[in-house]
Amino acid sequence: MNKPIRTTVVFALISGFLALPLTELLSRYGSYPAVLKWVLWMDLAIYALLLVRWSRTRTLSILFPLALLLGVAFWPNTWIGFYAIALGVLCWVRSGICYNGTPFRTLTAEFVTVVGGITLVGTLGSNSTAAWPLGLCLFILVQALYFYIIPTDSNRKTKNASTDPFEQARHEAEKVLGQWPSP
Image 1 (cartoon, one colour):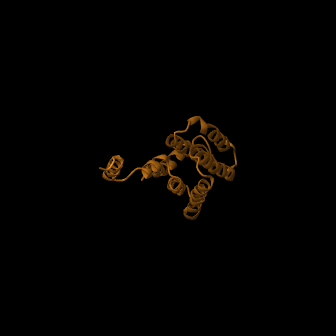
Image 2 (cartoon, one colour; image 1 turned 120 degrees about the vertical axis):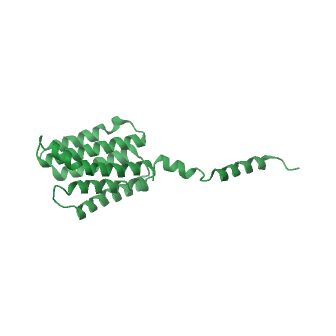
Image 3 (cartoon, one colour; image 1 turned 135 degrees about the vertical axis):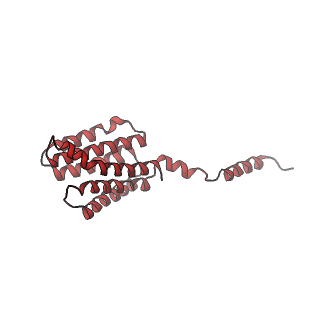
């Protein structure tokens, strides 16, 4: 398991455990729907920072998408719009800014992870307050599939490297012996 997959799984578990207490803590400053949007924005901002770190992209490149989403988070009565823009920002940061790959493969990865996450949350989720942290955790867990579909640089390096060092040494020795003239 590579680092982005492992960290996404751990991030999903931490987000699921901290979502309800953080919502309760922030409920002093706003109504429940607004606080839920703030918590989701914070989770997406942290995940975007992780994506920037993994891809070695400049942190300033994600400032505009996150600022746009924060503005929508403070806009009243924008539930569906907030979710749609949040999914768009996630795709924008992940596939547009951090991991530029082949368009078909990137589109496939985004479709599988976003639609799969929404389907899982919609199927297993309910409207109760205690169920939304589980839905958040499940959605983020599905996002780990992105790194199976789009390999990171560390995955590409390990695929190109020989798995057995003795086999690699044998190939090097054969190259050296093959260069000598025969008697």
